[in-house]
Image 1 (cartoon, rainbow, N blue to C red):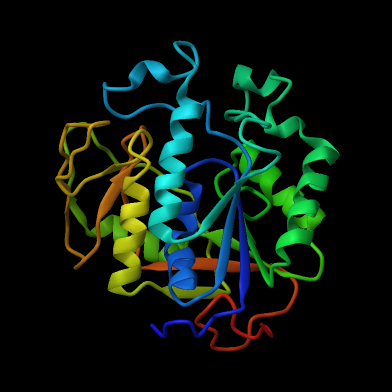
Image 2: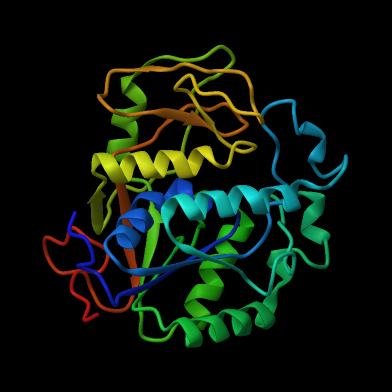
Length: 290
């Protein structure tokens, strides 16, 4: 890693909920920031419809105290600090609410992000005019796994963008399947399930040990949402989980559904718009004049 070799580069990642920045793009964002790039994460909702891992804060969820969104702000900013990047809430914290999955009653909330319309596009346009990014990162048209808020983040990013390159964060099917096959022991109650992935990618970014460790810690900051099976505990979830994998230096994690996944040693991207990636590209800014 060359320190400050990306000084002057400006990158914006548009994400739907707190924790998405860490799960899907944490390695790349940490690497860019460590190399001097100006990196901003725009988060569109507070993740109010999330579930909670661990009993400590279990009653913060919608249906009980409905305080989870406010709690997740602190998890988000802890994650952003670990990554070394700036954070902005689209429209201000609490402007748009987590819409939940398709069919969730939260779909009908008047502030649900899926109803954000032209207002959200204009909010993002204003931010991009100020930030002037060379690169935008978001999700593909299906939002990665079909979440309506991820799809909406994709839509507003493309609607608000100028001539910037847009990259979509995706999971490479082959590497994901290899990682899943390598998991030989799961914590009690954890299981296996089908995960969303794509058959081809335009860019595979290798995460060195430093960047990988930073990504893991940024994910760990979202303790109400993610459980990392490396024996760690926290105030949020004081119960340790241990997974066994045959892959060296790879950790295993799960959401509240307890479907095990590897934290892969690469992050993968598809080109969504703008300047093509040059042949043999290894970084998200390759081929751009910054």
